[in-house]
Amino acid sequence: MQEKPSDITDLDPGAHSTALAPARVDETDYEHRKIVNLLAVVFLLVISAAIIWTVHAINESERMQRCINSGRRDCVKIETPPSSAVRVPVR
Image (cartoon, rainbow, N blue to C red; front, side, top):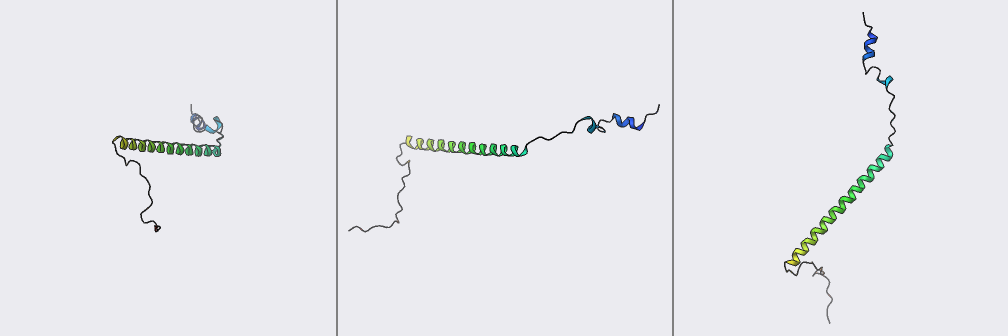
């Protein structure tokens, strides 16, 4: 028995893949997906900034508490006007 060449192509699963499976329709809404991803990035940046600010505030508070507990009195910087300010003569 001789086989036909067409019988061999019938056994190849890649030969008729378009005929066997329906074409996939891409129903992804890329505009909505882009907006959601952008909002997620903004949300993560806000959360990151809040965490960094909180860690900095806790660090500053601990530094101040260590200074006060050591008995120092110059823990808080008091802003004074510069000494090169215009002086008003006293009469």
